[in-house]
Image 1: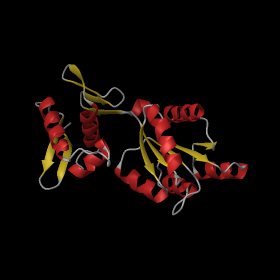
Image 2: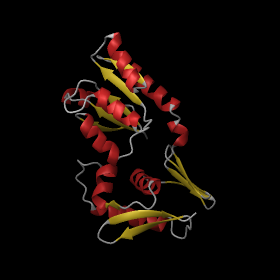
Image 3: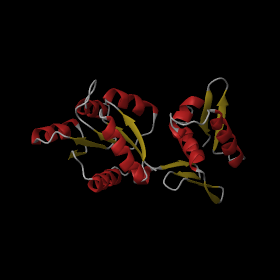
Image 4: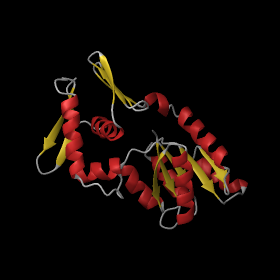
Length: 224
């Protein structure tokens, strides 16, 4: 399940893109401009960006250049009403991976996104290996100790997030916002419940541990 960030200052465009991408089984986060996008990228795992150019505060060219200047190789698909060859050329010069003009053909956009993800080898990289334990993002399974377990979506995403950043402390609110979404009506207590389920599920596994940090939240410790 890939996470796509749609960055566009037009609310209707964001809603349209989100609907198209969610119909194609992507998880979608949206931002109104490059400044918001950078904030999201600093907090969440994003696999690909669909990016408008003309936006207030920070436009698409600037956002792309800032990401490339720090060696961030996240795939970027620019989708803009700017159709001149010079506009497209500038997009590629600052580091976009692909460029489409509005209005977009939905099927073509999805094909381009799929190709970008494939070329970036993200599909094959969606795994965490800890000793003999393998977390597979695509199938949401954990293999180890002679068995393969398919986890419920929220449990897997929670475990994958913690083990992607071993030693880093995440508050319950952070985990709630990223895994369940900021608009969720579920209380943060559900994070505690899911942590308890994960601990019980992997009780006795020596490869990793989920540790409570009093007054702060949780972190994962990798032991091999």
